[in-house]
Amino acid sequence: MAVSNPARAMASPSRSARRFRVNPAYIFLLPYMAAMLLFSLGPAIYSLLLTFATFQAGRPQFFQAGLKNIETVFKDPFLWPSFLNVLRFLVVSIPAGLIFVVLLALLLHARPNRFSLVMRTIYFLPGAVTGPALVMLFLFTFNPDLSVFRPVLHLLGFTDIKQVVNNDTAPVVFTIMGFFGGAGGWIAVFYGALQGISDEIIEAAIMDGCNPIQLAWLIKRPLISRYIAFMLINVLAGNVQLFAEPQLMSGVTATISNLWSPNLVSYNWAFGLGNFGASAVISVMMMAIGIVLAYSVIRATNFYSTDTTAG
Amino acid sequence: MQPSIQAPKPPTPNSLRYIFGHNPRWNGMSGIEMIIRLLILLLFGAFFVMPLVWLAVAPTRIWQDMYDLTKSPLDVGPLSNYVVAWNNIAMFGKDLMYTWTVNSIWYTLASVFLSVGIAIPSGYVLAVMKFRWRKLVMWLTLITMILPGSAMVLPLFLEMNLFRLVNNPWSIILPAAFAPFGVYLSYVYYSVTLPKDLIAAGKVDGANEWQLFWHIGLPLGTTMVATLSFLTFNGAWNNYFLPFVMLNQKETYNLPLGIAALMNATAGSPTFLRELPINEPEKALGGLFMIIPVMIIFLFAQKYVVAGLSAGAVKE
Image (tube, rainbow over all chains, first blue to last red; front, side, top):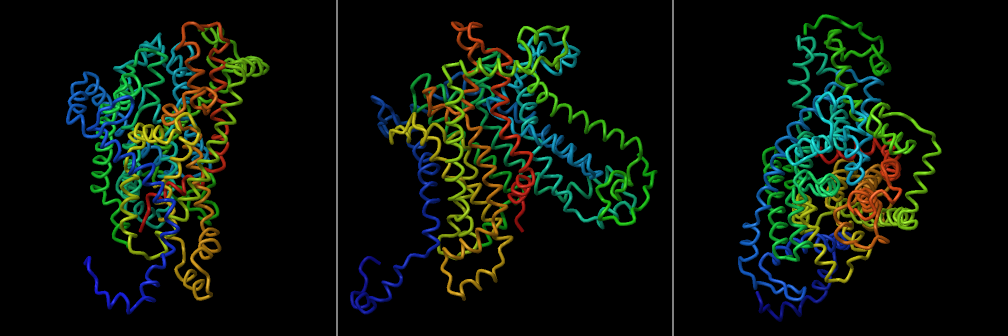
């Protein structure tokens, strides 16, 4: 390969010149590929390298740490509890989110009239509330003194916000907050998908004696399963990455650990303890978990099959 | 649960479909089932809307009143308290609120332009043009789409540190240039909606690839541009983790960081305690201030958002 035939190379100068003409597709894609390298693949590889690096005077010494960073992180008494916290959060938030989103979409669609459209918009609007604004709103809403749901909280026996928001209740607390901000968008998406189901199918099912519950479960649900998978991928990816909610809540109530989620532990290693190598180990772990989770959902639902085989 | 009540068939099902009580789709439902459905929908409606109503009412009240258990949580005070609360916020760090607002607007707009400007043509190319590395780019897009963004924050910080961009707004704007989900959305959109004949006809007429994109692709993609702009706007306006790590001078904060600072104004720093006039009404107003622009856009962009999210899920 290295030594080409000089005669052949000389014989076709015009051909090689033509071959050098760049496909315009690459010019179109240049900024995207540059951004991918700079802001995604690059940092990902960099953090992989940092896993094995020590720091001297703020400069990384690559491959000097061996497995020391990994050892440090694995001995961290706060790391495994933080993973357990997120796991508990996922166990609560994923099924609850899925069930209620699908339920509400089906209920809305059971009779798609103006009332349903108004309700859909009402469910949708809190999507505008995220991050610090969401945390603030729920620090008020979960406070039995201030809450708009004060009677409900009092009925449940809560008199102090620390009884409502603490390490034990955190998975439920974050689930409620996430549902408040995120459910409406997905309900609207499912509702839209349900409207795509033709009247004939539904009428035929009713003719055949389907009751509304059978209709929802046997006819409508399978037809929106693709959207459900899409939601699952997104919600899983989002929920594993919890940062703002525990970070801000721990600052205010002090009953939620400021090392509640792995992202917080990682942040603390880097900016609290100055150990960027250890922090990189957790970043890499989070990436690996994110990829494995998303990949398994994609495989299980055959989600992207059409795209990658298309070209 | 018996399919008892048979609603009368509407004369013209299509025109009357959305008018209450004339829908062919609900005739499987009994009266009790309809009531249960209504109750569940309204109950969740209350869950979604009541905290927002509270937030709108809170700045009209005085904070000591809010803790008064004899008063309703939705007690409304004089509207002029909005002005009082706003002045208190503006006092916080000497007009910092205005700085944060301007910062937020500029960070967000720059992010949207950069992100959408790169994602749309990239998705278009993947859908329309043939080239050797197409499959690789597709795969890289799908893989990087999965990479959790927050795991990237710390490595990005170290990278920006290398470029000496920490504490510089560009450290949070530039990463917006990489939007694999936007590229994927654009790709799906164009591969579903763009008529291949149109491109072929344009080529016959001698248009180059750039002209084809500019005169055919872009005009056909306006819905998608709107959707993607909205999604990016939403993400950038609410961006917290990345700015939290990158920006540590109050003058460079965006609104989310500012709101977080407001929130901690009394709880976090005991030296200030209640000396600063930042209490519940002020915090609520700050949150409201950050939410309202997004909510207005939400109201108008609902259609686009649904279209966009759905497009992400559908690819035949």
